[in-house]
Amino acid sequence: MAEKKGPAASPGSDDQGFERSLARLEAIVGAMEQGDLPLEQSLALFEEGVALARALEAQLQAAEMKVEALVRGAAGEPAVVPFEPPADAT
Image (cartoon, rainbow, N blue to C red; front, side):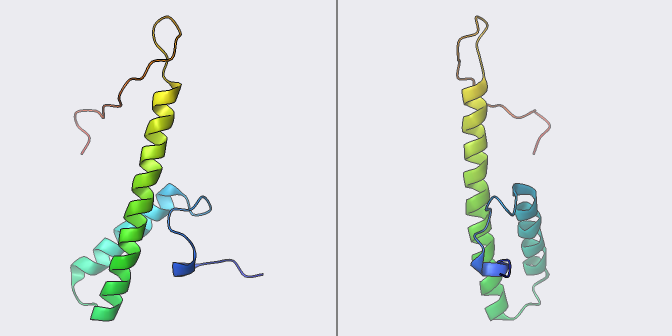
């Protein structure tokens, strides 16, 4: 049986991986920023990009929840500590 590829595969699924989805989203943005795509292709890429962005956001939220669940306080009890990115992160 052939492996699913393209729009039929769900964006951000486990078999694709976060980094691969992010790289695809960056490629879509780059192609659309050039502005030389036909309207139909631009719309298709836009739809794919939105789906990827939503899937990536969901993966990031799930990872944040896992981090919060794994953090423990000074006495060893579970403690919720919000994630704060480094000051130089953009």
